[in-house]
Length: 499
Image: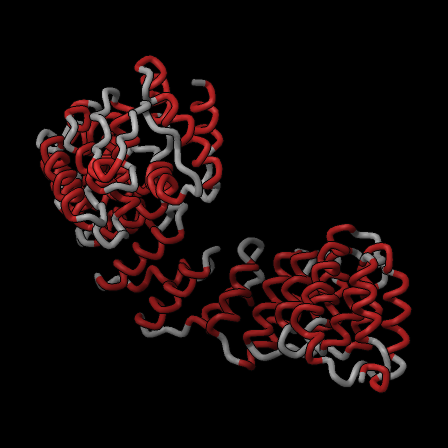
């Protein structure tokens, strides 16, 4: 059964053809007990996301999977009343539980193997959200029996699949069943689920523990500081905030997760301690900075004035964050404070100064920074000038092959925002350039121009731009191919020839 193991290992979301091959291999193995056991063991090790996709792929197969066992076909009208044989291997039960026929799925979920073989629990969970009421009811009854004693092994198998089908129309009932089982589970079981490698399961377990207040204060604080999953960590930080313990919240202000720091600062402000916002104004996270600015306002201060003072002190570290903060809450007059940082020796500071100047309405002069040696700076300048690009005459020289790739990329991006003919010319110029990534971008741009804009190019380009475009098309013939070159030539004909 190496084929089953290989197909399970290579399966990926959206690769339905591979799931069809897996179903074929499973159906072929289902009739032989030894092969069925090995195949089911391989399937039991599959990631949780595979089960819902495997189930839906079975009914989307454009061909019929091989039958589990050869059954003589009866003649006459009795053929329509034939029932398939009762499967005699757990894998055969699984394949029957995913069949097109609802009666076959219902018989499969009532099979004793569904209650006794934990490898079948994922498909039992899916059938508990089946669209046929009889199948759904039968599967829910069996699942309730399985969850009557909520062990770690059972919940570790059921919960990952349940949380993935919870968004389905009929999946909420299954999630409630699993959630009720979690409320009855022991602390050791819940701790194991909170440490699950499956992130959705981990979050599900944390929410259940927090809702039921099953986390002690020590465990809650430890999770708020050290939990690897950011969502679960933030949930625990929010729970710490509800304890009304300023000492604990102050310790979370130094946490490495921005959302935890913002949560702790928000809670401190609401507990009457807005003075902590002042020292968080220079945080690296925009979310924390905005929260700190709100805290300063709640304390009766002006965050913009604080940023002006901090910048006047010429800080060695955190300069980029202070420039960003002044841009976030400053006034247009503060542009004179930000503009000198456009020439700072640090590329990150220059990039942040570009963003701050743009927010403060000081875009004049930014076009000169399109030749900055740092790609991050040029990227921010191009973004700032996106809605009001410089004149094309200033941008064409930046497409020269001797320019760095990031400069040529920014100039191309801005030229495509002017008009359709400049966009086409910019693509054609890059097509014969030295950089393969830019050539690929330009090739895609020409295809997009032909698909979207060419139909509205009624009048054609003006002279002498028409001649320039025609020459560029001829230069790029080998790159474009014959058919694309012919289409471009047609669009570049004089208007009188297009009639």
